[in-house]
Image 1: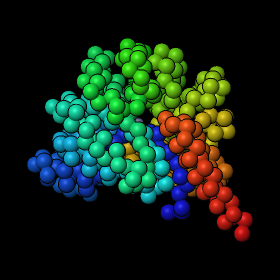
Image 2 (image 1 turned 90 degrees about the vertical axis):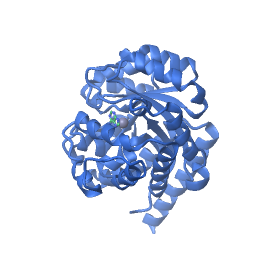
Image 3 (image 1 turned 120 degrees about the vertical axis):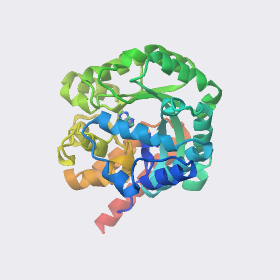
Length: 337
Ligand code: ADE
Ligand code: ZN
């Protein structure tokens, strides 16, 4: 791997970092039978036709996550890989309802993740935030109950998000829970415009009041929306490998990211569910470079955008931007000599 630029990862589902080897190790530890002979057979099942076909497997494999230690091990595995890929700050989604629906207490999930994250800066050089994500294909009342159940742990949570099957579950369904999350002092993001129409992006901004849009690639179908997103500099957390694997985009060479940058959108590159989609965040960046010929300046802009769009405090942002400036200065010096 070329030396990766320092960057923030802002769109990462911790459950989507469950590598097949860890899934089998946890299955053994927890005496759970997986319906695959081993990691290779499981990997061979990663042939998705759309978002739902992926979600079916993603939820099935959460069965191996039962104890605090399981969640700690999962997050430790991600943070070690992320650090190798240049990630210096990570904002990490988790799906509590994927676990509480199987009888795992929300406290087990949050305590387990928080235990890994609280020493991540010292161990991996990666600062972190946790984003509690609601499953949009479940009733809004379930989301409200989830937020209430997370009450004792809100010190560990920076923001709420909205994920799972998008089409047919517009953002407005979650207006009440987003208002409650805002009142609780949480930041707000939502998946929109991945498989769903551009109108869902507008609704997430206007009805939920989100600060960032996760994916958002379908904004490109609506020039007036693009103009608004540019004017307001709304960050879009784009996930190229995910878009190709879930067939939202045909190939990496067809990805709209260069056009999005050209339009002036505040785009960031992220890995979404790296264990399932063929790579972590720097793999996505290098995939884009190889398929689309992104320049060094474009790669530096993407890294810079990731820090600008993150929820870090001003002091940490300044530190991260200075680190990026030093790294891009080094790239320039190396290519000039
Ligand atoms: N949950 C995990 N990955 C997701 C994605 N790409 N879209 C919606 N929900 C998700
Ligand atoms: Zn996602």
